[in-house]
Image 1: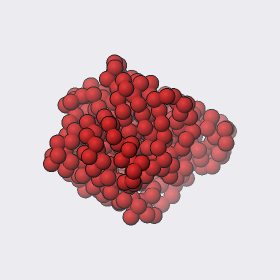
Image 2: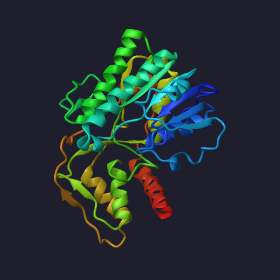
Image 3: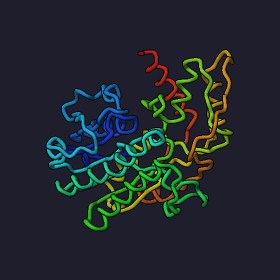
Length: 326
């Protein structure tokens, strides 16, 4: 992790979705850096256990609110805030069953947070977006200037959130940065239907069930270690060059879904009882990723951890420990 010195000392920060997978890791690092951290989460996906290791720290508090709320508690929370890390989201899995909620959270919730940020003089707004805004990539490697052609409700609603962020930057001068995430993995990742493919496979295999690959499995994903993503968020907060920019927050690691499933079986299925199953392709599933991270490396000096399989073992151990608790 980068040395941030005293930059975050005593700064008041809000992390939306702060009890979720990525948000809790951002909260944890900010607590260590002695920021005054408000974890804002409605616990639709986030869990208190994700922040249990530091929940009693004097510079950490939890606010049980939805990003769409605009009541007295939300206004009070935003007073004197220096930085907002917006990691709340309606996940891609939800958009298929409830696209209205997807739009409400990913676009409307972002607009609500931006309005609160402007009203109370927030100095920096860092917005978590997704590579899904590009749709099926047509240009490789995919840079930040790739056309926006989302092929899922989730991609559309997240693009809407991005456009609101851009408007508040261009019209009102709000200092903003957009970070497009790509298949983040690591400890605390949800292993239910709201989680990522890594943690879902881990749970299935650990519980003695075959991992299910949707479609042919040759889909390539760009996986990013969660601690690297925390680093990107914090570097965006301290570096003025990030103002008004959008970045691909991706490691550049490319792994097929078939390879992921097969390697996890080798790692976990010691008795060779399980096998990869193939299901129907998911609507809006993207086949190929080759993401350019040149700009985020150039501007912010990010160094990505390339040890995918080594880090995967850490995620495996974390998931196993969590399942044993239950």
